[in-house]
Image (tube, rainbow, N blue to C red; front, side, top):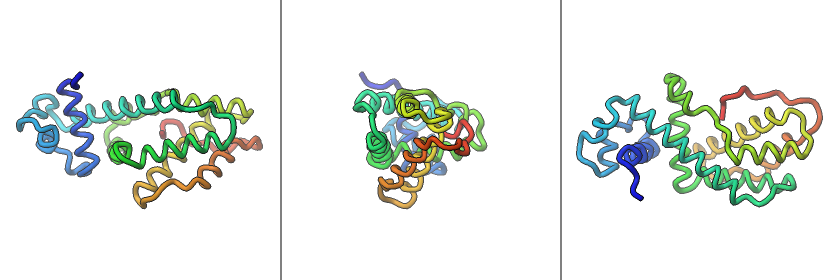
Length: 198
């Protein structure tokens, strides 16, 4: 089934943002990207804020769908290596093809949300099957403060993806191994990253 006009425009806006950055995101550029007559985007989204809200809402929907599908395909996580493999696959998806374009758009929107609280509300991390899989894995391994460790681990992976977007290449496996080892450490509680970061 073909997407409705608002979804089509949100997808086009996402592509414009990924390809041209925040300055390139205009109603006219979205019209062109969607191959629709001039004025179409502004008829559906009167302001830039409305366009950005639609874009971010669509981005979160696509991310949640991807994470749900990834969790469904994931083999059981039994060992630290299994979790490293899963995080490596996630980071590769976020750095290649359509995943890379969505990552570029996501980070641009995250920066924009510093000045636009309404976007920040939409971007707040949500529960999803992939996050829950990591949480359950850590709980089975008896780590203290599972919530904090899950959040911190995923924030670190997110930061590594951003670093590789800027500098190129893949996230090094040994870095993911170190992160997972840290998350599984059963010593004193590590310093926590505040909620609402990924």
